[in-house]
Length: 558
Ligand code: ADP
Ligand code: MG
Image 1 (tube, rainbow, N blue to C red):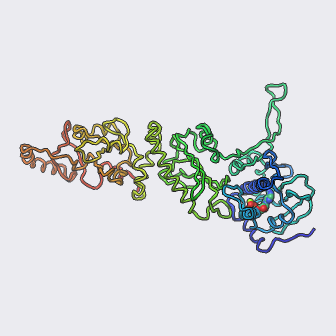
Image 2: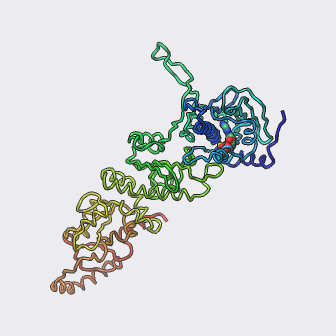
Image 3: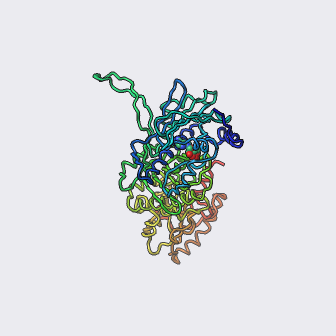
């Protein structure tokens, strides 16, 4: 048996690989399972194109098993296996991908699932193992082979008696160090959770021997431990299923399973896009505000999958800040991944997807407002503030997207209304959209400044959120109607002052001058007001900021 050396550049590359490409060691399992899935896919593809080969899906699986005593972890598959040459080419030359070549040779059409492309994933096994053995027998071949390596020094290949076609990868796990517990990768619970996390939607069954307590025969309260083989992945990605075959319950279950939230989602959005960039997405509008939603700790983002394999847990580029409450996932086969498959190389495709998703969410929210008012109001109660921040942020550039999604409490309707509804109801002679800002609906209702407007039958929007007035200032107008605070100097109401009143006014001037003096610079002016009915006096603001806004700004930490 001659020991062959890795090619010189391969040696360095292997070192680089093992130490720096991946951020999480647990990724090795994702990589090995992906390879197994590719290997089964290749057999499947062969069967599709060769009528002499039959493919019974039940016969194909991946198995993960741990041998704690000997610190061995095995990943077995019933895939296409490797010939001696293939072993040399694929596992002896780093960055050579047999899968990539397979895709090219067979001109695999769109929608094909083969995951491999870079030819490095396999070596991630050395992040957790001192020694890796590959036992394999290729489809259509009589001999099996054993490939073995302890890392950078090289590898050996020898003949090996193997009964069935397929591959078994055996990892001799590293000894624990102070920083890293490799024993953990032998624990059923840990392995299972890694499989679930990254490989849940690999389309072949991933089996594990699971220890279970079952009632002893003939006894009701005595239990005994047995080991049962179980399939631990869900296999068919929910997002690849036909929408018509899925029920609301399916979507709700997926939401819970994925831990998107503890509530029930108000709405789900299922997208299957086949355009310039192909992707599937399942998005949710939650009902309840997550406890940390309005804090810095909250992380927005969607899960990102590439061909069914998880790439990123929270891809924040997929949703704009103002829709940060949206939960869910996106799967696309058109992403260009970097070599670790943890990051994206170009974000062109991602940008396109993000744009579409944004439009879709907006449209769906609008539909919800129109057709499912009750739920929309629940939604707005939880996340409306975020939409209003959205209007205000980035110099108002999202206001077109968001203005029709806003709701405010209305004086005349005594419930929340949209701006469109307000404008629709405006009186013929009414020039402005009036609003009043204050602490609570009850307080605003008593504001003297609202009296005249109410008297004229004008509707007033009540702003009780800090951000309301800032948002509306950013909007400036809606359907060409300007917003006007009830506290602003000029309410735009026709001057109906009679001659008699005018003389009265002139006669009062001296009193006003006196009042201003007494108030010693606390007010800019004292004037006669037309807006009062039951109250003798009220404050108005002439400057850029309203009285309410000044209060908010003064209260903000610097
Ligand atoms: P990639 O999967 O990106 O091609 P890997 O380093 O993970 O790169 O694997 C290199 C190559 O080794 C694969 O392309 C494939 O040809 C071969 N290979 C790895 N694992 C298996 C397996 N379980 N069965 C068959 N071939 C495999
Ligand atoms: Mg691979």
